[in-house]
Image 1 (cartoon, each protein chain N blue to C red):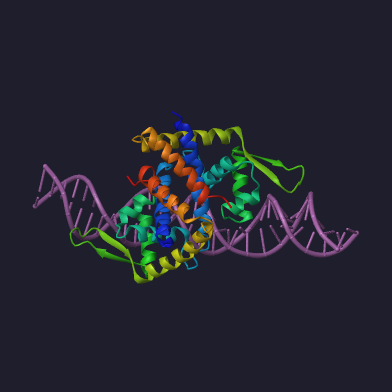
Image 2 (tube, rainbow over the protein chains, first blue to last red):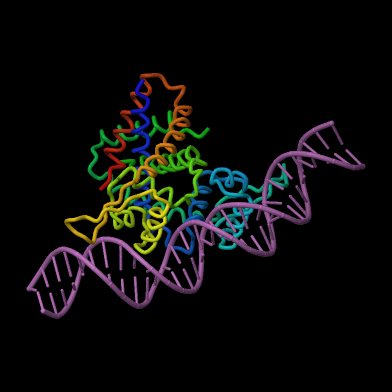
Length: 144
Length: 144
DNA sequence: CCCTTTAGTTGTCATTTGATAACAAAAACA
DNA sequence: TGTTTTTGTTATCAAATGACAACTAAAGGG
């Protein structure tokens, strides 16, 4: 019972996560990437290799628009497309060296702010935090 | 040591949260609200009453643009502005009855999908989940 | 009282993003 | 083989969003 209670917490929690991550990754994208383009690069970084359709699905954008944005990212030299030899309609998209460099630069900045945020936590608290992250990712925020 | 390990988990976790919440609240906004407008209404719902400056800060948008969007929301009858008698430059912004109705409709839909997602969890697991949400919100995703 | 700061408004323009139609090529299938 | 489905592309138009300048009004501070 009282699932509603849990739901309230879920809402408050996700709102907080969005707010904090927005704040923490604000201004990280110094380069000439639009917000959408940055999100795509981030997605590729985490899930590579991906296909255009996967990006389209996961990011909720139409194939034409996905294709357009990816073309721009390729033009900027941030990602590489390799035609799948098994199915030549598909392209495996990965980050190029420049793309990886960009993301590790970005992650570096984010890491610093993350460290500041958890600076006060004891070793024990960090372990608890890690367990909590694992648990939630497994039970609630699993990718279906 | 191994804070880097924790950071990796943080990145993976926030990516998952974004993906899942995007997915779960996709198509929820049936009305004539743009994505940005929906986010603003959601923010007001959670934090009301708020001022224009607060929205501007938290959502990372300029005052002129915030003002413009809020004017549209007011025109749609979704929110109310009350001039603060103590400082007549400020406005306390809250949701109108229509705004509340819209949000509770939206939250209702989200709740259904959330329930589906956690349907398999036992009572014990739900308690653990709740504790994990509390812990993370307190230690990591606190609003500074 | 003047000066500065804070809070918000209005208008305008450029860029980004979303939506749709029409297309091509490879694969799957009957 | 011919047809359909999947995967992606190109082009075009409309709408949403971002950026900036110029402005008003209230508050605060000397």
